[in-house]
Image (cartoon, rainbow, N blue to C red; front, side, top):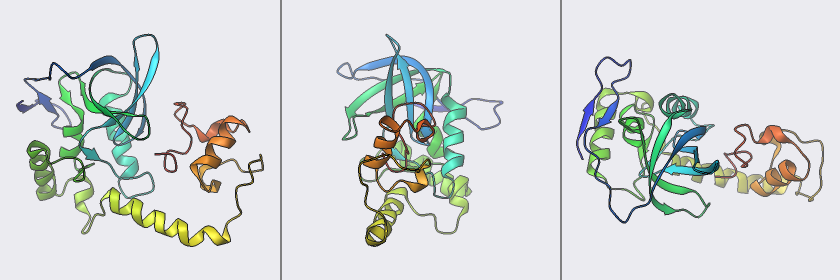
Length: 219
């Protein structure tokens, strides 16, 4: 697999000039219809079936983390309402497809890393190609690397979880019934968010209409 850049773009896009796909890997084709964050999107495949796809090998900033919204906008710019090819690696614990996504000639995960809007996910990837792109982005202080000490999302999530545990005794316990809550900020858990979406009809909790409310809680 070799990488090149598309000339004349506002952002020098990383393009695949050769794509090598294992014969054992499943490949899906469709159109990107939703972008949840900087590393997760929804693709509408044959039969109008929406599939949730987590980009393999990278981890983007969380919604409430610095550069989280910018990372999401970048992924939307690259993929939204465009044909995509998904090479499936596996299904994760959340039922999402984890895979490589190509839009046109663009390796989307590589582009997000090169723009400085995602980390190489060290827990799951030691891809030398992605690590080299991350090092280049860091040296150029692109995107999140402009911060003096950017916090990787996996550490950010760990800190957020610890904070939530400390606050549990002071928060109302989810009683399993509808109330006056209407925003994700008011939800104490993914379970509560799903209940309010499906049982209480609070549709605003599912802003991208992919069936999953409050992405920060229900990742």
